[in-house]
Image (cartoon, rainbow, N blue to C red; front, top):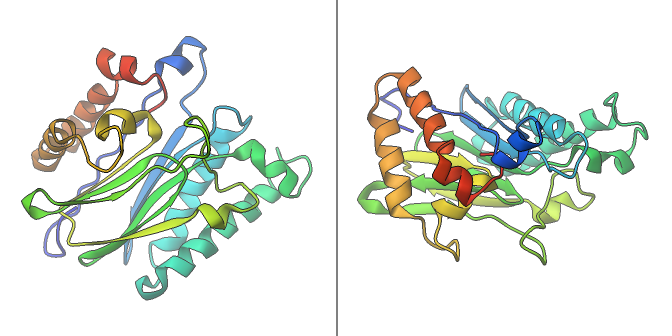
Length: 239
């Protein structure tokens, strides 16, 4: 993320975790981004327990980017809520939703970690685990932390009946870089309490991606980082 007078560079990638690779299951993580009046980026993790979690993740990434890229930033929170409602309405009519009502939505369960950024100001919007990090000058940062249920393996999804109760907004100002991730990365991107980032992990990656002029090289480096044996051993989930 760079200021208005410079170009905005986006580097994004997803890799399947060993758990899915060994079972020959496709990666359930999705991402999308777009630039209109706003920069919008969204990461979604389709629930492994949901039959169509990948579809739920793909739909929310694409629809939120489309609806929020030119949305009014002064009322962005209500615009995010409206956009999520549109995704849910799409899934009500999806050909794989046999019930054609909310009873079928859990089959598309997925999380949301997203950001809308406009001229030095922005907001994270977040349902479930995964995380958002905005890096500022002087090693300061703003975090949108993961949220789990009563157990560490439980989280929240936008397909739940009470999804708005789990929707969180975090305002950010003057971000130098913004990072979004699914829960496959949070275990080594943060300290164990999720109150602090792992500086030795986050800053070297950010510095390289920020300064690498070749987008192809930057993306390749990101994929390699996500797919190292150490990363896969630390967390076998999709990243």
